[in-house]
Length: 91
Image (cartoon, rainbow, N blue to C red; front, side, top):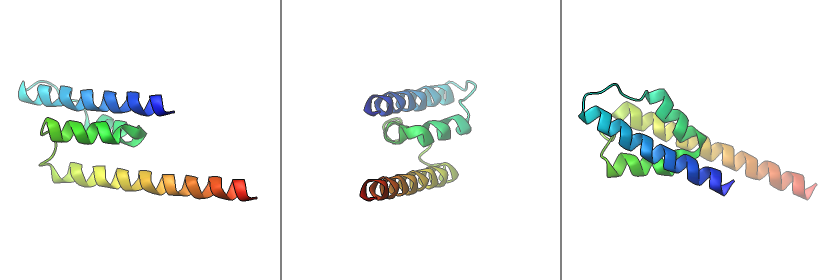
């Protein structure tokens, strides 16, 4: 599981770098839906690092709000899973 998270974060980081390169070169961009999918699937750290290091999407308020909502959703899912696992172990 840890390896999968590492891989998705590396992919997210590289994808944000690639999209920034495409933006600078005025090439066809990677869709925001795909970027959000990478974030949702666990590439949050890689995406945030890519955003900060490459200064990509950090001034786009709607993107930041949607990213924050995805992170909040991830936290809620993790809390729910933790509660579920604890309940299963105590019963």
